[in-house]
Amino acid sequence: MNTPHIRVWDIFVRLFHWLLVAVIGFAWWTAEQGGDWMEWHKRCGYTVLGLVIFRVFWGFTGTAYARFSHFLYSPKATFAYLAALLKGREPLYLSHNPLGGWAVVLLLLWCTLQAGTGLFANDDILTEGPLVHRVGYDLSIEITRWHKLLFDGLLIIIALHIAAVAYHQLLRKEPLLQGMLTGNKPAEHVADRLAVAKTGGWMKGMVLAAIAAASVWALISL
Ligand code: HEM
Ligand code: HEM
Image 1 (cartoon, rainbow, N blue to C red):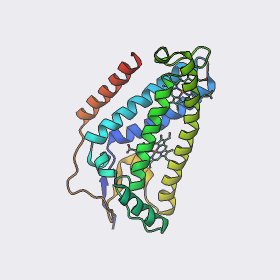
Image 2: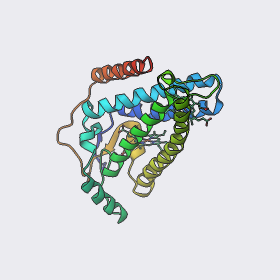
Image 3: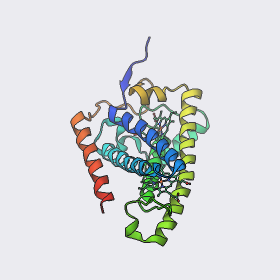
């Protein structure tokens, strides 16, 4: 008999995720190219900021499994999950598991810092972030150093994220990737199934996306 699947990741979460992946990849590539590509590098950074702001809004008001209140657990519950994981007996979750939930917070914060420092960065040639005039040249040079260091950290966190997904997918046979692509996950034997799922709604998602975009525009016009 087929395991019943339910909709866990709505279209906004999925679009957020895969756009973030594409845009961070493109930001990396454009930074390597330099020159005229730096205009695109900046646009990638603004998009990352917009995506993260949207995801934070959605974490408070979006569909049930996408809410922070659903997938952020106490330190005690998180350590209990870790202990079970180390014994290879961790429970299954529909949304992010307790460790995964905190990894999401870390990824969102790191992306914010990465793009946020970019706003104050300059390459000493042609390109400067839109807020360099707020901090002056010397501090901008220092922040540019952080911007580059942060990226090494981001690569490490992303590598850990992909390793964690691969562990669940390949060793524990959980279809996480299919979940992030189709939105649906098998709903049997899970620890976090909700009786009533809150809905998100297209209109709400579109309005929040517009507010996120406007916030970035306001920020870079400061
Ligand atoms: C730039 C690289 C990446 C970043 C910044 C990133 C970031 C994130 C974030 C923030 C989430 C949480 C989604 C949410 O709740 O909104 C997530 C989940 C997820 N990511 Fe990524 N990701 C990256 C690359 C990848 C890649 C390459 C894969 C595929 C191999 C992947 C597979 C997944 C899956 C399957 C989930 C859902 C995990 C679960 O079901 O708990 N990610 N990622
Ligand atoms: C998450 C988004 C971003 C990522 C992943 C990222 C990544 C990077 C990386 C890897 C470099 C180093 C290139 C090198 O070593 O030569 C770099 C440089 C730079 N980034 Fe970003 N960046 C992001 C956002 C931004 C934003 C929003 C701005 C400005 C609006 C910006 C402005 C710059 C500048 C001016 C440099 C040149 C520094 C130099 O070559 O001396 N970045 N970025």
